[in-house]
Length: 373
Image: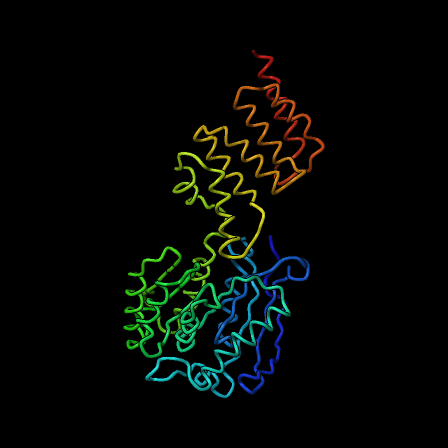
């Protein structure tokens, strides 16, 4: 299992020319950051970082332990000093756009903070921004640009600027890159906030854009504040849905029910990880086993050759590719070829529960079958 996440935390000062002041951020790095010098991590920027960093880090720590979510670099922006939160989020009542300090803070994030983080840390191009209440509304301003700085938005009980609840769906409709958008409210939310959130939800649900990945949660028995720890895992699992291993329900409902293309299903899952999330990773052994089970159950034995090829590209010099080649020959009735592969695999490295002893046992089983004939 992975180590506990975010053991490395540091508070940093940024001299902002845009804001004409010094701002404080907290950077939380995953433990594997130092031990994986060639790896880049998705970037999660938290408005209201003073109180959102711990619940986000806790959720990611738990889910990463089980390999359900990827490691990320978290950056929390301190906004509680001297009422900075209200000034940072300021927008004009008539224009509904950032004005004054709100405009400067917008430029600070895009023109100073992100370049600073990209120059200092190994962050992937995939960026997430999250906020709560006032800042959850403010983050929508980054959708007003034709090319948003962020790929994913987590808006927890947002308080909107003028006309924002109608403008956001219009922006999402014309987006030309994949956008993940998570929105949450609760039956105990502030009523004036809740009504506009419901209007926004209706507007987004009417958007016809295949590049939009949208999820809305309306929590029961929660308030404006208590919905936050409920919404965070829902949001992260929504954004990183492609990252999760193939679960029993995904296997039953999606993979095994396919008429063919079981290996392609796995390949596409990891291609989406890289294309949309910027995360390149080896195919998990668990997902190889899921594809193997679907192939055998449906009698699509020719696909075992494709699975062997995928195994060799992900785990070269291990037993995995040999194992699938041997099963293929066995299922084709070519027992002598299968025995030869099982027997000659001693020079390959063991992986998972695939051991040399297991491969030799399989060879002996097939030899017994041949003798019986």
